[in-house]
Length: 274
Image (cartoon, rainbow, N blue to C red; front, side, top):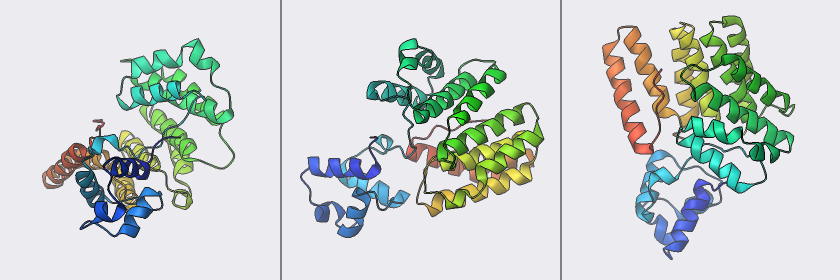
């Protein structure tokens, strides 16, 4: 099981032999800290920063994005996550093509995760990606998806939409975007749903529809902050800056760039620059 914000904070607090009352003093109530440690409440940015400072914990050890297991072997799963988070996509592609790793992929859930990671590596590793191969991997991921859409399924749909936007296949891109976003607000919150909004906006920007892109970004920012999250905020603001620049709105561009740079530094977030 992947560590959560709550479990990391609890482990750090206990390692320092602090009670919940001591750790929360002057920051929040003991009951709120208890809720955070038991993953019943996700702290907002200000609260998270204060708790990390109190416990001497670096923010960059906290990553809200859910990880997807491709096998029952923790060493393989951890390696996939490490390479993906470090954007070492060629190494990730080599790992996923290793026969021993492939042999460890057993269940439908693991197969869905494996092919999604493979598609990401195929898209990002080469200077000129083979888009047909990427799309095939995405379709193989979807073939193993459960009937009820999960965050990973939505990610796969919206990644397919982005792929179609590269080829200027607007109709197909819109269909996959619509699937990815349909009734998303009713899902149990998963930080990777933040990515769905961003990629949907990037898809519309790629198609030259900046008005739609901007609306999706603003909806995404509302969604992210409503769940006291921060994951992908820096990327959302950077894309707003790109759109503002293309529309000659220098004031909005500067403001969004400053927001993006601040959030990227604060949360150690890699910003994609389209």
